[in-house]
Image (cartoon, rainbow, N blue to C red; front, side, top):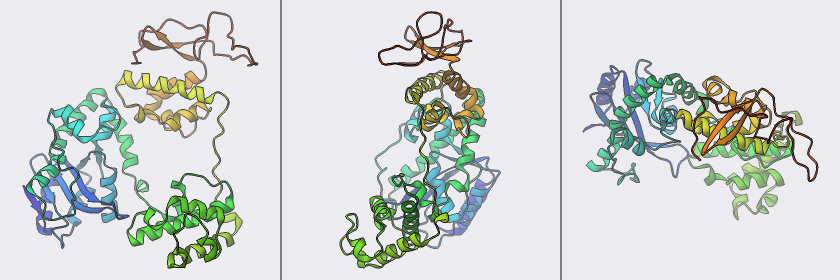
Length: 425
């Protein structure tokens, strides 16, 4: 086992790995008590070499060679569920690895289900079972045992076979570009920027007045800066519930802050308490034109809820027929927006998603496509006559034009085409 604890050794191994077409990468980290993840191990494997980099044992270890490898455009960096690993590299090295191949995303495109775990994917591709006995290891403690290091290394050794299998599957299915579209978002620096002034946008929107929202934005930004500078989780600084109550009550002095039920006793006399009061006052004194606009809730038209449920059935049918995880094709938000009559800025209506699902979704919404049963199968029917709904009255039924009984979303349904596919109930 090649355990790296010095900069010179890291430089040498990264130079060798830079000659490879790809390198599999994983990290072990701890962040239960910190804002920023604490990097504990880096595991890497090329076609003929595996290494573990130990930045904890190597206190003077300079990770610059590793960051150069991550930025090397000639080497594909292969991760499984890459987001947190990339976040660490971005925080410590100021860069996003590129190019990247995420085997979890590729597996969803290739029909392995939604968000398949690494050990499940390894077993399905290679037949190997990964020992899970060390998955709850405290990776910050030293020394690490031989068994713990072997467990960590398995995260990149099996990944080589998984990568080769998925690349071949994507090529066979003509879906390599689908994965590349997903990687564009995953490797965008905007995905990992944590700007304090935007922290309020990640909160559930319980505020409905611009004045309250101005306070919420200011307090959320203050909490974000405090958490980052003190390197503690946001909740250790102030709970979300406290942010909402401060925005609603707008305490302008320590006594008013002390009366809030979400504020711990005595907190108002601390420096943080004084900072919060000052932040509230400053937000209230800011010009009204600088206050953020209250996000407008989407007012779904009547019947959009039922339409969204129909779109879910169609999505499941399309996903199963094409061997693609449904969540990769369309999100619940996509379906709700399509059902509400929107078309702009919906991922499911762009690129390969539109070809696979989006066009059918629009046809279903417009009554040019219908869903029905053929035995135990869900099938689609095309219709030349769009569905027209009669005005509803108490006690009346919806009617169709001339013809027989109504089928969901269509008029006179034709027989299923030969392209109809089966969907499991």
